[in-house]
Length: 455
Image (cartoon, rainbow, N blue to C red; front, side):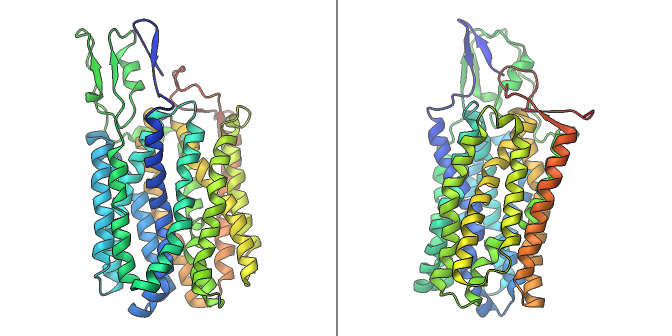
């Protein structure tokens, strides 16, 4: 919802300008947040030798990072609503870097869980969520494209971090690799520094205080309003974490679907390098498989973002997202028996395409359900539920490999979970959710989705 100021001017998301710099920062943060838990898998073989542990033990490292990325959502929402995005991201960048630097001096796998897992994961979480909130504040009409471009950070960084990790491992060992990676993560602080809050200056506001409150981006504190009319009422204080969003049945459906998704979504990428090495693929070629996924993903995400913004696609966004989930799940299932390098490359191409579609659409669907004003709280709660799923998925897959020495099972497991999530979301959307035309700035509804339980 925009605010009409004297002279008929409407203040809202700029859809450009400094928003492109914010988009670049979000691109980098998204790259580190999503690519790093997968790229760190290139070190797993060496960690298994040094610490005498199995696949499930090393898989816990990636799972803990992802769980912290998701599970810290409510804490991050509270901190963002209280302090703003920029300070939270600066602290997060320091934590992410410190975790990896300390991890390079660890002597057992438990210490790795606490440093590379908990500390670095928390640091990434304090960068990831605020960057998404800022992106949603700066973009409205171009939001699907902005989300797609920002999400492309994940494949770009995956393409770079995976082979880089293998090079660092070959030349400096896993300890040296962790130390250098810790230095790279300091770039998150730079990204936090460019997250400039929107400042709205008004001479004469022709809007109610409730409308003014709804216009504010979630991360913006009341200090971001400069009112020159002293007769205006001071906006009411914003809740630090709004649990009332859980009353939205559309959000509940989304949470259930995403919980099922994260059980299997990250499993193939986390265990793919070890699988290839066990099949006799050279280390450098095995690490390159993740780069293939990332390279395809680079083009899939922004392309999917552009398609999602089309006027005849946007009203059907939940079904488009369901299609992406089905595509990803079928890719896993159909590639379960691939053992040679050529078959793995083909799998990576199709997985990169489908994974990119999922990545580009997931947050656009969420923002469409709850709207910008509730996005911070909703995202925090969604990530909390997803944290449970990522703690279960990869370690469970590692356990199956340790027990049955058969990688085929994990592809069937992961694929089946993605297919189930896609079918559930499509059916639930048909019966309970009606996607309406995008009018964030004009209608009294906060989101792009309205609940229609009578269908």
